Image (cartoon, rainbow, N blue to C red):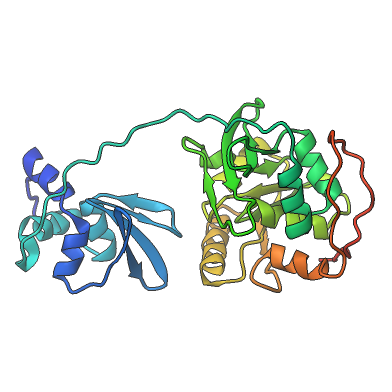
Length: 318
């Protein structure tokens, strides 16, 4: 039986506030600075560090300095406390508390039309016009007034916007990011009536997959995590109890397939039938663009309706 060790609240607070970057440097670890944060590699996984806080990009988990030592140094709570309070052979810096301003979620103002958004999604990304119209008609996709980003909106079961993901439309733009205050469990998705749920990393991958597998697509459920979090997957199954099978359609790269295996293990634990689908190229949009290489889309007409001409790109079968 392990011996109980009492730590005062002051000691606990001191340990929590240890600067993780300084801790790692004292151990000879290499870090890459990115603005006010640092990146540290744990194998092939990236861990973001800011002061005494850390976040594992692929597991979508994080915490303070105590949590960091417990996870990555494989120590118990008392061992982690002693490790941090002892200074571990070096002089460690106590990080000042980070004050985070909590901003309410608010959708970006809409542009008066969607010409740039449609040109980007149809001509550059190869999204099927019928599919795009279906989402735009329901105000799940629109163009922002400022910067003319494509905005992908996620609603809760009551029809309230809870999440928005922005994607730049400029020819040289690679900008993408979630609107502040977005709830990850309600990221971009589509509710269907069948037993199938398809999960993707990005909204454009989701639209690309649907564009390639259009037969009865409206019957199925789809979700884009805007990353590799599992929160929207579980929320979709909660809101749609008829879902019985999950298809994990993440990117064909190391982070994507590691995340697919992680989600697969969780689904197995919960007894959920599932299958991993892997794109031929890096992601589903690259597959879609390859299929559409010889048949570029034309710009859309306004106002938006759900009716449109047939898609000239070939439809692929699973």
